[in-house]
Picture (cartoon, helix red, strand yellow):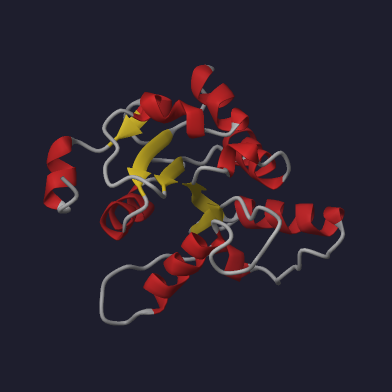
Length: 183
């Protein structure tokens, strides 16, 4: 049995790794938050628990590495920007495996929002794989703005033994958003 203590981070690379051109910037920001020693943001990055792969690697190599990372993860942060729903390759694969195979909760982190009080209203941003699993009630999702405080709360809180309330439409209260200074 895998030791599931990592957080898997999924994002739409949009075919590039150039800064400012894709959601990889948000992934890199999470890595920077974790590297800082002057605050309490911590996370075990599942991507760092296995050997690195390059975009030029064979698809079978990438797939095997992604599955290994997911197998060792307790949750997934799914970074959702305006183009995430357009990904037809890795993001749908990662969502499908996280929910259907490894049964890990999803922390859906929206890049362009400061509060999430009505997740269903953001459906137009969801990748089809996520929407289908929310609709069929097999997904366990907490919807948060991509901000440090909600991520700091959600990452250690949710795992295969502790799903968010609300099924696929979980979200934090207005009061929580106010405590974080987001409302």
